[in-house]
Length: 113
Length: 113
Image 1 (cartoon, each protein chain N blue to C red):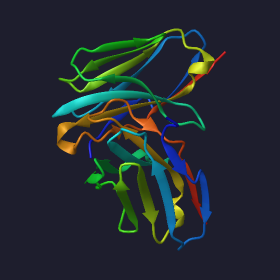
Image 2: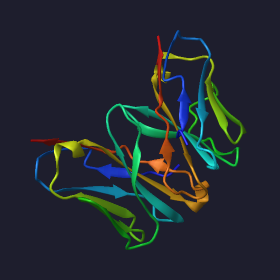
Image 3: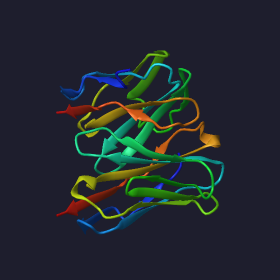
């Protein structure tokens, strides 16, 4: 397996634009996490899916953020409209049921100017 | 979302020194405690996953202990080497939050020759 795959690796966009981040989890993993990493807050959990169903989205900053998992092999995190304070590295991770180790993607570095 | 605390925030030691970090986590409805190693420009990689009170795990010069009753875990590095320089993340999960992994902000370790 190629591991967790995220795209794009880097994204630079203007304030107000829509941004979509993509994640392909490891085949057979049924849990998927989206995290945001910043200097101030470290690695924050944004949302967590189990069997494609969102379990906990209390970490999603505000209504501008949304996440979907239409099937077991794909998830998106969308920011609309984007703002400069959204600039961060966004990580996706997947695990087998009930917390064996999490495998992380390479992250998407988002810069909103 | 659970509050996972790690200390110290950063640590600078000389090659050959032994060191340890602390992770504290909410002990109610505890399910698992994870340690990850995160090198700059890479993704976090799992070191240990522990679930039982009193668990001790070891991988080479790195070991970890777990106390679920009081809610803490220690990570030890014996005879630190420059290649141990990284950020060490701790994450816990509980059964109430759907087993979502919540991370501390990490301990940044720098080992100089």
